[in-house]
Image 1: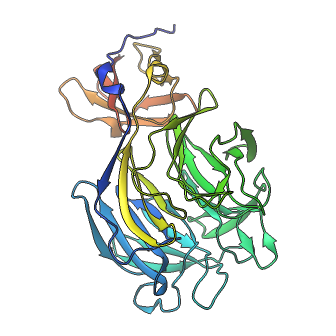
Image 2: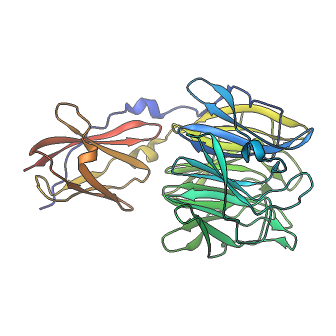
Image 3: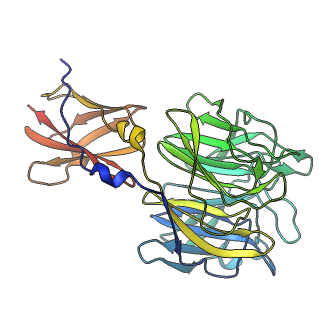
Length: 400
C-alpha cells in the first residue's frame, strides 16, 4: 500500500521573496586576467591559468567563501610544469579532483593534454591526452563520475564534436556531437544531472540553448537565450534554475546582464544585472548554492569578484510541495518520491544520530530507493536538503 506522508516545510516562505542580490567579495589573487579556467573542490573555488598583461599564466588560486579569501596553490603541472601556461582551456572536477585540458599558450596555439590536480597531496599528474583534435575555447563540465569536453576551435576551424573522460580508466570516448552548430566560446555547465550548452560564436554570435542527457546521449534544443546573441559569457546551474551572464554581443558590447532559465517551464526571465562592469571570458562557480563571478576582459583585464544569491518566486516554491514515502511501515526497501531534482537525502535516528551509512541509497530521476542493512526496528527521520535553502523536507519512516 502506498501511503503519502505529511512533511514539514522548514523554511519560512518570506525568505524566498525580494530582489536577488549581488555582493562584492575578495578580488582574485594575482594579476587581473581573462580566459582563465575554474573548478570546485572541497567546497572551494579554484581559478587557474589565464591571460594577463604579461602573457599566459599557469598559476592557480583557491577561494574560501567562509573566509572570503584567496590562497595560492600549486601551478598547473607542478614544479616541472614550465611551458604549460595557458588560457581558453577547459576544466571540470570529479570526485574531489580537478582537471584542466586543451587551451592555448604563449607559443602553442592549441593544446590537447589533460592534467589532474589532487588537493590532498597538492600535486599535479598528467593523464591521457584528449582524443579529439587539439583546440582552444571549448566547453568542459562534469556529470557524476565523468568529464565532458567538446566544441571549440582547432587548426581546421570551429568544431562540434564531444568526448567523455572516465578517470577510473584514464580514457576518453567520443559521444554524440553537440546538437547545435560548430562553435567556440559557448557556455557549458550542469544542472540536475544534465548538461546545458548555449551561446557562442560560429562565425556569428549565437543565442541557442541545448540540453544534454548523458544516459541517452541525446541533445535537445530548449528555449533560446533571450539576451543579445553573444560569446564569452558565463553560465551555472542551481537546480531548478540555470543562469547565463556577461559576454560580448554582436555589437561588440561587453554585457553585464543576467538571465535565469527555469527547468520546469523551459522559460527565461531577466534578473538583477551583474554588479561589476560588463565583460567577456570571466569565470563562474557555485559554492553552497551561491554563484561567484569575476575576472575577465572589457578592454582591460579584470580581477574583481562578486557573489550572487538567487531568490525563489512563488511558482518555484510550489515545486517543493510534493513528497511521498512508501511503503510505510516496512522492513524491506522503500522509496522516497520527489518531484524536484537537485536534493540530498539523509536519515537520522529519533535520538538525532546520523545513520545514513546504514542504508543503501540508490537515486533515480525522481526517486530514492532505500534499503536498510542491519538497522534496528523503530522510527527514523528522513531529512531532505537543498543546496542554498537548507532543510526543505522532514518526515518519518517506521522500520518493523
